Amino acid sequence: MSNTSKASSVATTWIGLTALASLALVALFLPALTAAADSAVVLEYHHVSEETPPSTSVTPKTFERHMDYLATNGFEVWPLPRLVAAVRAGREVPERAIALTFDDGYRSVYEEVFPRLQARGWPFTIFISTAYLDGGDRNYVTWEQLREMEAAGVTIGNHSVNHPHMIRQREDEKEATWLQRMRREIVDAQARLEQELERPARLFAYPFGEFSPAVAAIVRKLDFVGFGQQSGAVGPGSDFSALPRFPIATAFADMDSFAIKVRSRPLPVTGTRPESGVLGPGDDRPRLRLTLDPGPYRPEAIRCYLGGDTLPLELRTDNPPRLSVRLARALQPGRSKVNCTAPATDGDQWFWYSFVWMKPLPDGSWYRE
Image (cartoon, rainbow, N blue to C red; front, side, top):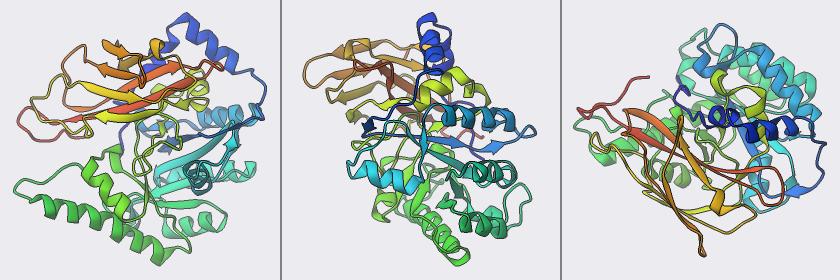
C-alpha cells in the first residue's frame, strides 16, 4: 500500500513559525476570488477512516472539515481530466480550481467519500490497482461498486495491476525486461479497467509515488498523464508524465497546512539535476540543482526543507535563477522529499516544488513499506 509517512513535514515546520501561522489563519477567512489562473492543485488521499493507519489516512471528521473549507472559501472542484486538459493547453482556470484523488480504491472511498461528495455534487478520481479487486480483497471496493461510482460521474484511473515499486529492477533482470514488466503493469491494468467499466481515463498514478525518467517515459509513450506523490501545484510547465499532488494524511492534515497547500502555485522549475531521484546505497548527500523561470515570486526568499531541516542552499538570482540545494545530514534508506518554497510577490500564496530521493539499504536491497 502507498505510504506517505515519510512525506514532507515542511508544513509542520512552517506552522511553528509565527509569521506563517498568521498567514494560514488569515487564509481561512479570505473571501473567494473570482480571478482566473493558469495553475491548480490536486489533492491525494488514501483511506478516509478511523480504523486504518494514520500514515495513509484521515478520519471522516477531518475529511469533512477539508471539504467544508473548500466550500466556504470559493474553491471550484473540477474533474481531474478537465483540469489537466485545461492547464496543459494553457487555458485559464478558476483562481481556486482543485481536483480530488484517492489512490488504491479502498473500501472507505465507497463508504465514506462517495456519499459525501455526491451530496455536494463534487467530482473525484479513484486510481485502481486491479489485482486487489480481482482477488476479492475485502479492504477494497468491488467492481460492482466501481461501476456504480463511474455511472455517478466518478473518474476511474490506472494504478497498475499489482502496485509494484516501479523503480526496482529485480536481481539479474535485464533493463529491457524490467521496463517491459512495468509497461505490462500499466497496459494490463488498463485492459481490465476497460473490460469492467465504460470509460476509464488514461490517467496513471505511480504506486508509492515512485518513478524514474525511464518509467515516466513509458507513461508518456502509452499516452497517459502520470501523477506522483511529490507536493506542489500543477501548471502548464509541469511534467505531465509525473504531475505533483499534495498527499494528505493525519500528520499533514491540520487546517493551517491544508489552507496553505490548496492555495499554492507551482514554482517554475525548468531544469532539474539530477533528473532521477533513484540513488545508490552510497549516495548519502546528493545535491539537487534547479533552474527556474522568473515569475511573481521572491527568488531571494526561497527556502528548501527536508523533514524538519532547513537545507543549505546557494542561489544565483540572475536570469534565469539557479538554485543548488545541499543536504544537512546523510540520507537514510527510504523516500526523502525535498520541498522548496517561495513567497509570492502579488499575493499571500506560496510557490512550491518537491523532489523525491529514493535510497536503497546499504547492501543495495530495497526498503520495505
